[in-house]
Image (cartoon, rainbow, N blue to C red):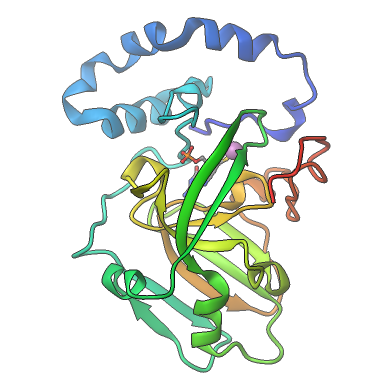
Length: 242
Ligand SMILES: Nc1nc2c(c(=O)[nH]1)N[C@H]1C(S)=C(S)[C@@H](COP(=O)(O)O)O[C@H]1N2
Ligand SMILES: [Mo]
């Protein structure tokens, strides 16, 4: 169910990954064939739901990306159904539609993406609203210290300190690779935390809650670092992305 190996495996020889990479889509095709009529996302969801090896994490997701979901299936949200709530320790809680977010000031960034399992995608454009803008609109209370993110997959969570959340390279992203965010990449709205490992960039973002202190997210409960700076965490030495 969890496509990403736990961090304990990070330092192990790459044999397993090379082996799975060699198996590639041929082997996955056998597993996924009965569900092909459900479309790509259905196949991916079905595979990740029954695949204890994490093979589905190796499925291409376009342009060098891998599809990751810790949930077996994720409901689709679009411009008519999507809502983002901002609440917690704020003076002005709010609920935004996709149109609301699209009408806000837009920031574009082009950086490498780095997953903690090793894959990296160079020069990926992201566009969206700075998280700091949404926090300013909400009016964060003085004693607040962190931000918690929830997702409409019903499972994934992430968090940042308030200082991290206010960085100019942290976006509530609406576009990726010069396209509106598709479902597989966490659309219509995902978080984008440019300087951190990609697990911080929560897909299918539905809630932003200002809290008093950081609560570790989904993968962090399983051992990943809460402060996930690329090249300075998780025992890795990748070139920074921020
Ligand atoms: N909701 C949700 N967000 C998530 C994940 C997930 O499983 N669920 N996986 C994370 C990890 S580990 C990575 S590497 C990226 C993968 O993003 P992609 O599927 O667009 O390549 O999403 C991150 N955000
Ligand atoms: Mo990842």
